[in-house]
Length: 463
Image (tube, rainbow, N blue to C red):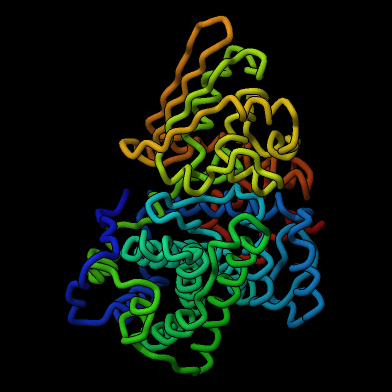
């Protein structure tokens, strides 16, 4: 099930707003979210998205980039309201959202909504889970909150993309703040008036720069969005007022972050379908724009690994966005390697893998990989869609082979099977728990609506 909303872009004068304001309509959607029954296919998608988010957070438990954020959050203390994923400590809900939102993005293995370049679950799940634990809410309410939060952040994303992103805003952080506030407000079951104030409080906190995408602050952007969204809902519940029309008001979200050509698209058909169904669950821990190329390279290396001594040239054609976001030929950091089409292609060809273990083991300065990167010629082909890629290899013996990809693995058109998602989850979860506990936790994620109390999840990683 997928939405019929199309990106309106940002050029030209804005179309008329709906008679009721965008903020008011979205707030009404939030207030009804706890009571509305999600369609069964949407529940299934949300359960899988939650399992993927949780696995990514578990996999980052020992990641060095998480250490300063975790240390500061633990030092701040606060009421023991919510879990730090993979650890025994519990802290206040706002700081738990911060740490867990950061962790879920740290490995670049979390999900993606390709049409907006938003990582949909990142801030939304972190905020919703923190308050669901605090309030001992049932899994069914968490499912609804996640669907509501993702719907709002991605609808705003479709209206503002690409202008908002091209201006330098980290769209997952800016609009994730509002998505997190919506999800948190659903857990708190705020009425429409208080939910509108929560969106306003979130909008005035929304921030995040694309300049951070090649350093650990990228993940801080998402953690901070989760914390800000959580705080927004709590403040609204406590009685703090904001602009009730903060999204469409003069000097509000649209005025500051980019005026959509059709602001009414944000609320048109709201509730008829859910954008969570468009999520791509990553099979590779790197920028999603690289995934079609990885698929093509893995297809070419299926028979045997390809080394620099074997090839004369490697001709690559990808969508221009892949070159824009991941066009660095010789990255100098591990994070940089996860945002390099050259490094990812070399890894897939030479190591015949692009999973988390392969990326972790591959030094970006490895001479074999560097030599293979030197043989690559990359073309930004505007005729290709973001999900397409072509690779042609000319070998030193004069023979050639090529591979093309129409839809990358993990996309809605080629979704990971439940067995593949389980394999990914278990590989990540094994970093912080044993096999039996990891499998039990995965099964709990896929039957989330049966949990009467979200605090039950932590027993899988706390003995």
